[in-house]
Image 1: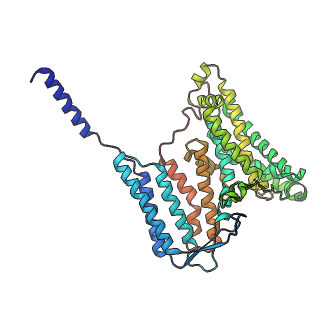
Image 2: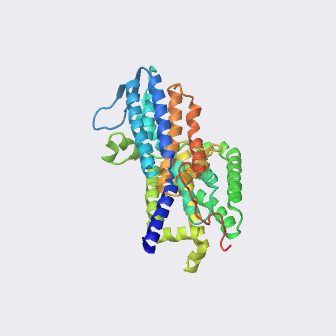
Image 3: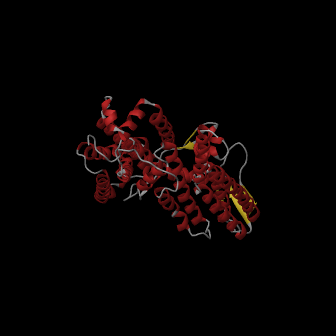
Length: 432
């Protein structure tokens, strides 16, 4: 054997040895999640009894709708089998390719949620699962979270951390109620809400962009400022002028012809108020603008590499100012849900922590509008299901369901949903 053959053989042996040393790094998150849901489905199926009544009332006007009786245990066990099939597929893909796609776990999650809804009302006389109402409540409760998360990602893509979402939601709710009551127009209340959010954003941009104060500190201080200011104005002003400045005003429901009659989906998505349609528009426009427009490219450049952006002539701080004001206006619109959106008068601390849940939805959605909407809907569904469980006297403690948004937040921050990387220069002033 000559020298070249010896070298070739040695190279092959080295490659074989290195290949044997390399081990495929497997990601078991989705597989484990699917199996956990499968086990929970099985427990619910084995313990369920009687009949589950699901209401499709007002699902459509095309044909009569009413209640559907389903045998609880067989139906839940069928859903368990489907969930197990998804778990097996996720495990096989993880063993073969190192990672299972997230949609498999999502499919298993859908089967799990269906089983949970049936289990909640199984064998309980007089208990009905109002499916359409549940989905409508989910969308309604997600409104402030969607607007708040959009506000956060618009700001953070340019490098400004917006912890003040809670304050923007609260001041938006306050000014929406005042303007709507004073003008007898809830639609003008929406304008007032966006202005209120932008006013808080002015202070946020002033201290973070111009005076280079720590973003977290500024956000916390602004939240406390708005809580104190609205509480003071409510106690000394609104409380004694409820008929003129704090009347319950509600946005009318606007049904889109044909679309609003699509079974189940129609009443949920296309028979809503103007605020919901504005939310749809904001999500679509921002998703396109952030990743398909010059404004989006420049905004993201300001958050990722502001020095490079400045080198090509982009005014980094001007972009930060504009995006913070836009984000504040969006969060203010989300705050309008608590008053004119829900048909309620203003009361103290109406935001009730939704601003911080919106931040969690933004992180869980990986700073992407579509992901933020999905996370917001998850949080909204958990809250809505908790309310439904209270009304049907479910055997599952309601507090467990109300814990879900916070558990998901912890898992997201811990990295369970995958690597979440914020813009590289968020929270850092420019120039350094």
